[in-house]
Length: 320
Image 1 (cartoon, rainbow, N blue to C red):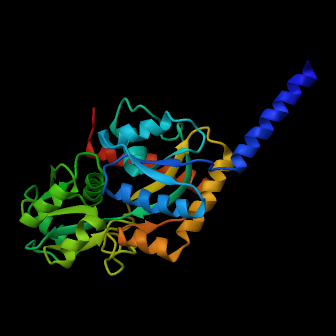
Image 2 (image 1 turned 120 degrees about the vertical axis):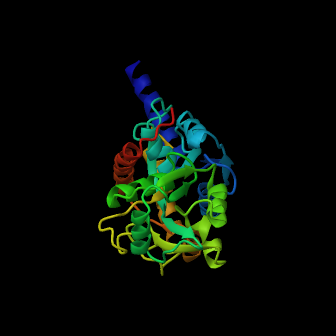
Image 3 (image 1 turned 90 degrees about the vertical axis):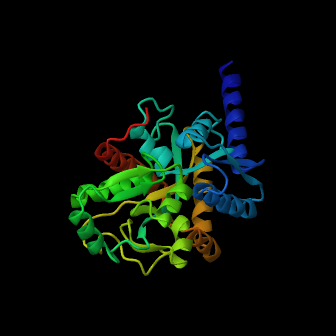
């Protein structure tokens, strides 16, 4: 009986190992927890297209938007941990939400296995066309001369561009009023119209308006210059020493996904990010390609949960 049981275990393990070596054996769903056309979704599509080409199997993007990315993220958490449902998400759903929501239906560090970083998402500090400043020092001077009279826009309470401005306020002692809008389109439109004076926003949302002369660019929030705007200085370079904050996107699987599958996907992701055409596509989307090992990605996500928790506390924002 013991021999029979042992034989069964060996057979099961052999079948399991074979299944992993054949991965992917059927189409793979890549969940983007935001609407079509949003930055995360565009990054997911770029990645899915590469995996489809190199892994001889279809990788398709499934948009599951809603509730600040929670709906799609929870869907992946509850999916089978077999490598056939993946998640492309980042600082919002997997870092900021951990502090914004008292009853979040997932734990970013417990319920997901990081596969690898895809891109950093710097935010750009932009001002209205008639704002009397052309660099960060002039911006700070004007705000200090008009305490409480200058407004800044965001895409909503608790989103990265809101929290990045709160970090800048904390670092510089600025008195500036937050005006949240429903999404980037509305907030950038308000800036162009002069309803607000300044804001942080992703490159993809503001570069066309910068080039069109409708708004002015001041600095980027990231620790180093953005590849999509290499001529624009960082906030730290502009006089706020040590400042650096940015969003990011990474690839995840449900916790418990077999290690060989995770390793294979990480290798494919690393290979994709090394291709010049993939790098260019991401840079054209306004993000900076980032390559990390499995271990580096896991450590980075953990550190970002902690970093954004500090920003949420500074802002006083709560979603429930």
